[in-house]
Structure formats: structure tokens, C-alpha cells
Image (tube, rainbow, N blue to C red; front, side, top):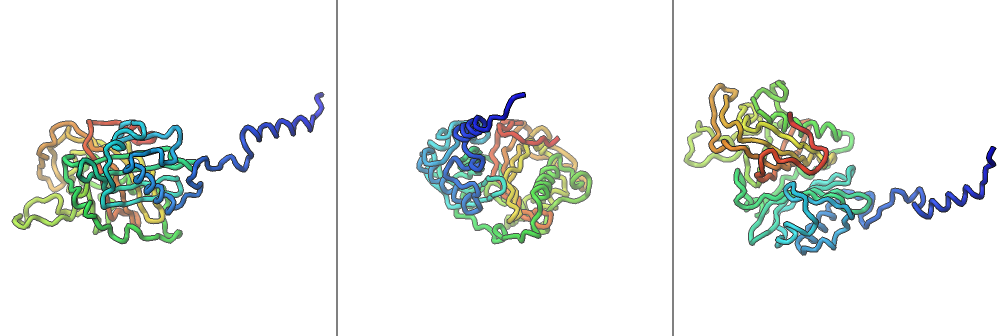
Length: 338
């Protein structure tokens, strides 16, 4: 039987500590961003990133050696792409912080080629360094409803985006995600019958949506338009969905919900809308409707911020450029809509 050599065991443990560090240091930060990066800290990381972007100098950032960077779902090296053409920050900034997951998202205007564009950005921080950078750009001439100039005035956000919900009234992470996912489920092959045939959708009566800077709900009618004329964007969120008019969106895949701000009831979501293969259908009121121009396969690379109150969506802010049909995401974890 072997004898227990105490001195030898101590020597082995000492050697392991020298190589791997002490147990208490195992989760220590390896970069300048603190491990307990709170809301203010995450917002500061966004400011640091945007400043480095405008300076075209990624060396200013505490990047992980294996940082993953994408522009409109294309994998690039940090310093390439928009890093070479960014001219400055715009006048609009909206930040969504998720201290629980160490992630933060931004929607705002930037400047390129002498004009503003819309950018949606997500950063992930691990052990004190930025490990993921996901950026999506909607540029002038991008098509669909849009008004970049209005967002760059800047657009004034309503106060309730910034409310603090008491801990005892906060929804759980999964509850918030379920509401956001219900929006995509109700929109995919929209038939007006509600989510999974329930007859309803998760909207407050005053729900409102902004897409690429343009209101696509509750928009005023043109002065010369008759009150009984069909105007999709003058309708509210619930009326649009109950009409079943978004049947053109045949699939919503790569659904991800990486940033969940429980304190403010916000979910920053990512998805890809496939459309253009069906452009004619029967609405819930029995009438037939045909979308002009939706006769070619195409997709929209979507990021949406959902403001959720009492299990219902009150506001939606979207940035989403057109992309190749059924584009896939390089980011893991996306869910199929089928």
C-alpha cells in the first residue's frame, strides 16, 4: 500500500496554483471592463465602441482575441467594412442594457458618405472584454417604409421606454421572450386568427411601431385621402394583425433574444423575414388582397426592440435592411419559425 506523501502533495498543489492561478481568481476579469458591469457600465461600453468606430481605431477597445464581428450577417475582421467608412455619430441614440447576460444593444443614427444611416448594434462582454459585435445597417435607398432623416432630427423617445419596474413586478426573462416571440409567431403566415388560433395578439390598445424610422401604425392619413380608403399604416397594431394582411411573410427564422432588459420590460430581438413567394391572399374580412411588388423571393434582416407591459407589446422599434432570400445567420442559437 502506498504511503501518503504530504510534502509531495503540497508541492503539486503549489505548482498548479502557479500555472492556473488561485481558485478565487478563476473568474477574474482579463480586461478592463468590470465583471459586475451594470447598466451605466454597459452604456459606457457602447459609447466607447462608437467613439472607436468614428475614430476608425479598433485598438481603442478591450477586444477578446477571438472576438466575432459581423455586418449584416457577414463575418468580417474588426476594422473592416463600416470601420473604414464611418464619418461620425448621428443625433439619435437608444440603448438597451442586459446586465444579467453581460450584453447591450444600441439603435441609432451614424454618418457615412455625407448622410445618416441607421445602425443596430449588439455587444457581448465576457471576463472584461468584448467577445461579440453584431451590427446591422439600413442605408439610404434601402427600400420599404423608411425615414432615416426623421430619426436623425433626432427622434424623441417617449419617457416610458426608461421607466424602472419594481423587482416584484418585473416579468421573468422567459415571460418577456415569450411575448416577443408571440409577435413573430402571429406575423408569420398571418391569418388574423390570433396566435395559434387564440383569436388575439399581445398588443396594448396604444401599441405603435416604427420601422427604419417610419411609423407603420397609427400614421396620419394624407389630407386628400378619403376616410374610408384603405390605408394599412393608419391602422393600429391589433387591427393590422387581425386583418391577416401580413400573410406575405411566409417564414420568420433565426429568431434570437439575446438582450432582455427586465428592469424596463424590453426585449431586443433578431430574426429574418422571408417573403415574396406569396403576394395574394384572402383577408379575415373575406376580401382578396394583393401586395404590389411582392412577387420575388426576398428577406429582411430584422432587429426589433419590444417594449412590453403586463404581457403585452406597447412599442416596437425596428431596423432591418433587405437581404438575400432566406439568408442564414452566422450567430448560433437562432430558432426556426416553422
